[in-house]
Image (tube, rainbow over all chains, first blue to last red; front, side, top):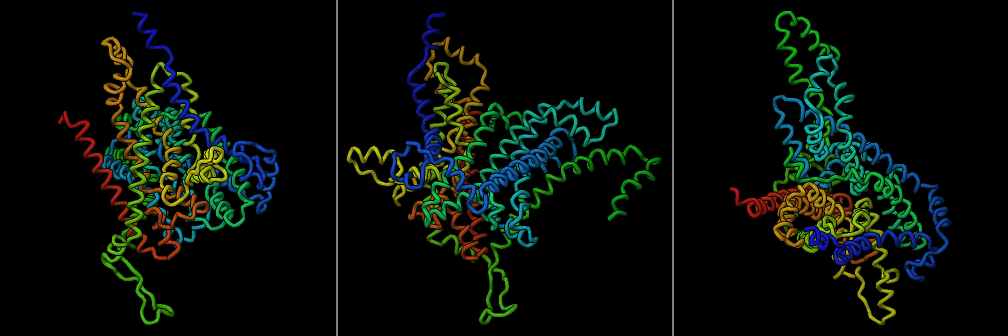
Length: 283
Length: 324
């Protein structure tokens, strides 16, 4: 018995090799940008593409000098949009999901179904009417115009409902009620901590979704001090078409912008339990 | 406002001796959950429902210019019937962009899901080594926003930068640039493949992990090879996950916007109407014709719904049809 098992469990060079090739393909542009960001603008198109140079620091200094450090503003703006936006979104999703999982009230299924339909609505289709509506309120070209539309997340609510159903026992809520605890107190102090591991996943999802969303800030914002990194770098690249010296700044900027996210991503990797279909079955 | 806000409370107090239970029950049963759902519902109405209705309204309107169109009141908004829809659907640019995006999806989705499934199965195999390194590396591009990945690949496609062109030059072979008009669709598909394969792999891998190990032990005892186990047991078990990833990929494909928009400064061959959403953006903001843009948006949204439902129908009949 044990001999065939051992034979079967012996490492396979083929499958390990295919995975390593996949990994190298995925690392390829990242390794390249590390090298490219160190090049001077005369070297970008002349030296071998993966050969690093010594200009990383001067590129960063130049990038920092560009329009009085607007790049670092973009960095802070991105942290604000994605961080605060995802935090608010997670809280709203958690609260809605918790109520939909744990309360019984007339119209509950209707509310859930309508919210769930939002999952299928192509998000970017909303951007233009959102712009026109916010323009009437005079809110375009403000932080609010990017922050507010991204707080609602039907998918987040859907996930939160599953997490609440699975992790918050009904007896605990009843016990807290008998002791006279207010409903919001029960949610914030008792249910929320119980749902926390699942909420980290919702937070990460929403964080990446906001940080990835290009069209909304691209439409809403005109003032470059409000830009997130994506819109800012896109603009810088556009100017590079006429001033190629900016290309090295674009690449240094690209490198600097992926570093924080990659770090956060590696630390929180275990929270990426993306179980789309099984979630549907459990619900 | 203040008076109405205190009303329910005071009413409850006066009614308390008569029917305390019922009043409290109503509050407990209905008002409390809805009050707690209010943030979600209000945000949903403001930023999802209202924009959809607004788009619908705009799509049936157009600007009417009377006289020379000068002065106040010379321009008014009038009901346009289906004019905008007819114009949008018969616009050759729209047709071309739809065709382009369908081709793009036909290239991208099978490759992306095929590789994601292959990688997930390989990760799940006990004979694979360096699994956690590969898993992290393949998932990493998910953390890179589309604008930045397009920018990185965009440079890598430039013949002056590309290592492939460098090698080909040394060997005396002339490689065509991926940024030329015939190949740009592959260039964009590659960017999306790079960004998406890891996420889909993780989705499938997560559902593979949820399968009880005894099933594999049993298959092994029956003498099934690893490839047989993968084809006959693992893939059917995770089929629902694959269906969901396919659905989400199709919806994302129809909405492709950031990649071609970012590539434009590097590739002259990309028109401002390359994808349907780029066309919508151009109509709304460059041509200031929000009415046509609204109609085109509705067409894209309806097409997305239709494709989603059709796909789920077909897949459900195929995959889960035996039970019905």
